[in-house]
Length: 567
Image 1 (cartoon, rainbow, N blue to C red):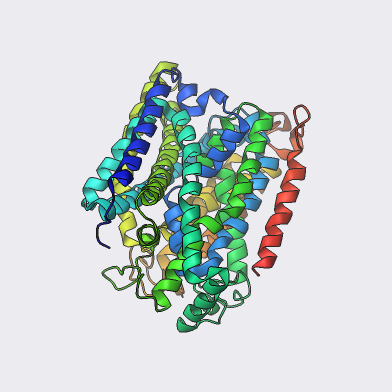
Image 2 (cartoon, rainbow, N blue to C red):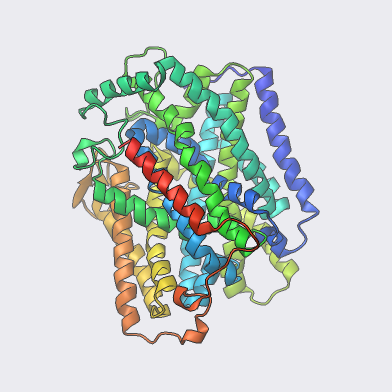
């Protein structure tokens, strides 16, 4: 892709946004006096802001650039990441899990594991989560560097360094509060920047009906049945029947259960936003508020990918996705190409600003989660316990610098993938999938022990590594994508491999935790009150507000209706 021809107004919009986010960090510097301010926003964030931040923390490169890329690569089946792989888990964490997180007064997910299990379980999760946030942050940084190099003609290295510096400045000064308010701004920017793109693209292809007709031709040309790119479930009876290369049980278990609940229920990146809320009631409402816009986001970020592949493979000479050196389509360039194709000056600047916001916000979210977990659960637990609050605040800021530096290195691993969502789901399969099994047993089975949890987590992660080491996606060579110990199974796609890696990790962790807990001594009930469901008083809504259980049931019914409509 060549350099985009930006008008002065486009540069003005980009510059205004950059100065604005830096200004937020600078202003909040005066209000960030303690470690609680820096890491938890002083637990004073209103529910609606926390809800939008809860959603926007997942609106980084993987959501905007990655979901559009997956839409082009896999079709409307990418919507499973929302209607099966997100909303049900978001409702679950709000109704069932936030009372444990918020009520226990834990400062992080690893610290909850310390309270529920023991020190070694907390330490193992802290290390694995820290590594995951660095990889995720690196993916966001890679995507932004790719975008800047394409738009401005900069080389990739310079683009990555400049993007990292911008994020470093506003997180260094404003901490989590700076990240949260920039995430809220990012949410509105994405809606304003991408809605016109969807409208323009649909008008170009003849509306939804015209898009379906074009995609039917693309499906047939790719060797699939007509409708494969626009139907959710009808072609999941066999992996060979859909471009994602996955059957319904792998989709439902790998994505809908293990990866989905593993991410939304245990990933401190999103949980941290709810824990920053001003009360228990607000913390429970936070994921429910986020679930409503999450339901409609496929229409903003996946439809552009559907339009792009329909134009590229549908015989339209005016639009073509570029190819990578190995000849495969570079799906990651879907959104930049679509913006350049449809947007005039001014609107192009708004769309590019929305992209920049998503990348920097995604990176900032991971860095704020990383600095919290490292400071409290690694440094404060093992290196310098019982230090002063000012010392931990200083360490948190220095950890931010280190996290940004490590993210720069991780950005180069993403270069090997033609769809960044594939890489992210692989990372989640290693970390979140076994962790969810630990939480499921720990929160709902009081007999689970610390020895069982630690061994289960360790064996679950090892099983993920072994599965990855012995399997490989089609048309890939052994290495970063797997097969580095040999090839026992080849999957039709990277995503299919990820789903089954997650299933293996969860299953091994669950079984190991269960068996080892049965032969080791559990903690007495009085030590588990507030940490296990059966030993915790059920939360009651404060005041006359709406009940989370009722709202969650209504949203779940709406999600079911959407799945049936696109069946």
